[in-house]
Length: 152
Image 1 (spheres, rainbow, N blue to C red):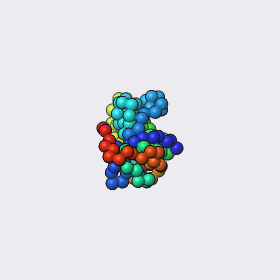
Image 2 (tube, rainbow, N blue to C red):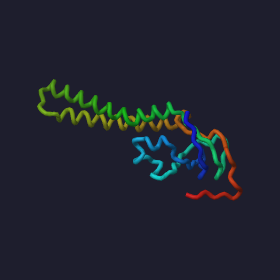
Image 3 (cartoon, rainbow, N blue to C red):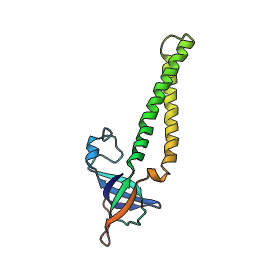
Image 4 (cartoon, rainbow, N blue to C red):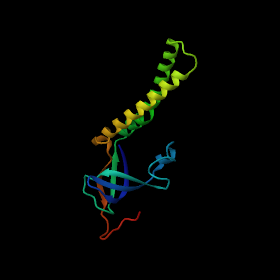
């Protein structure tokens, strides 16, 4: 499990938005430039609010790293594997029907890539509803001062 600290900046019906400081793992991440958490030193994360934290509270959040790794594999590797498998099938089709060139491999490869991306999107929507894929607040470290207004 990975733990982070942050401040509650917004409350929702099902959880809260937490502003965290990017940690050292962010610096080594290959996706840091395209990360949805923004380009600054802070990240904003939506989490489940199981401890009834309020605006301005400093909290500890956690997420299961195994769930993160599974989601990353699903998101990045499955479409690539679909592309490669489709290209291989397209190549076999070309050989079977004595078609010259790589057009069948390209067409079947990109078609299977598109199909796996669609499948991943549908699967990811279902996974995001599962408890193990949702970060959550585990405890409140420090309550906010009365009248706290979060700055964005």
